[in-house]
Length: 229
Image (cartoon, rainbow, N blue to C red; front, side, top):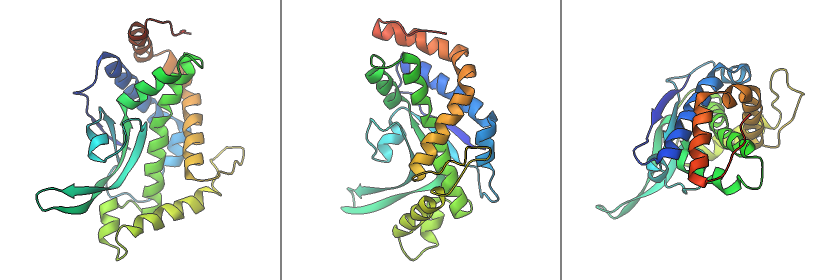
């Protein structure tokens, strides 16, 4: 369903362990029935991509280092050689997971909530961003941002139209077998559905060797204890 890419050259040991946990979680998400029910699409020119990143992709798209994840669509750039601004537009339907940013967020909140909750909350970023990419694919019939830009006379305003249409649809969207929950917007839908998916695979995550290895490494880095099941 998603092509997977990894940028890990700038990760420290704890971040590398979290990357491995993210990859394990990603594999479990692909097997999850709630995710698979939403991931069914009628048309797709090519598989979407997910990048697990060490700030390389984050910096390329001019995103802040504390962004946990994002869907890459477009970003303003400056060409120093020609002294002109231009718009960088994604040629893939892609989600980016910020490994370093997520580890920092876990450290920030580990002492004000159950450590396990802080780790699982960070992992919600993965299905959350994957869902945003799938929302785009459904709305554009599988076209990438650059394909939508090139086929429109509206320039970058075409992206506003796409996201506005997604917002309208998600307000009335319900998941199969859900409690007929209505969602305020696409962010609400992605967050709640992402949490539902992580809740459903929580036991498999927390019993995995990748989780235990991350917790051990995390404990050593903070010189504190994260409770294990």
